[in-house]
Amino acid sequence: MGYESIESLFIETKVQESANLALEKRGYQLGVEGEPDFYITFYTGLKGKLDVNDYGYSYGRWQSGLVDWHLTVDAMQEGLLMIDIISAEHNELIWRGWATGIIEDPEKAVKK
Image (cartoon, rainbow, N blue to C red; front, side, top):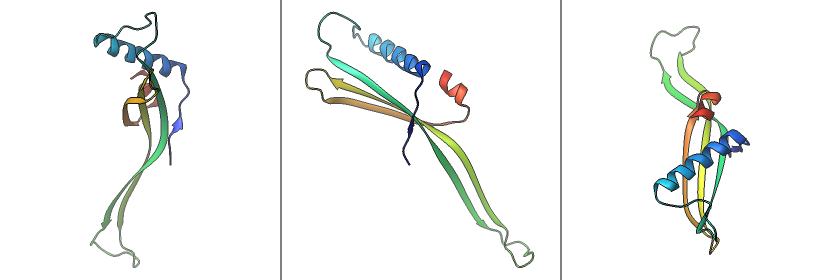
């Protein structure tokens, strides 16, 4: 199962601001005259994820002929941020970075 794209102007703005700040700290100049050295694009997405833990059955007392089974299932959302840097001259991927993480509270995740 793949990630479902997140369309959010707030997230787009925050990712752009963070990328610009990181590049400026490394000495790159943004928005200068002439052709750029590279382009940056990014993708954000969400997908449902199940965390299943099977602890097996217990060797305790049998009740009605059944064994006590220990199984937990947790449903959660996993978020993805992928950033690509593309050469302006050759239109080739120079670098790709990504991060994933569990989103417990979507409102807090957007702010983070």
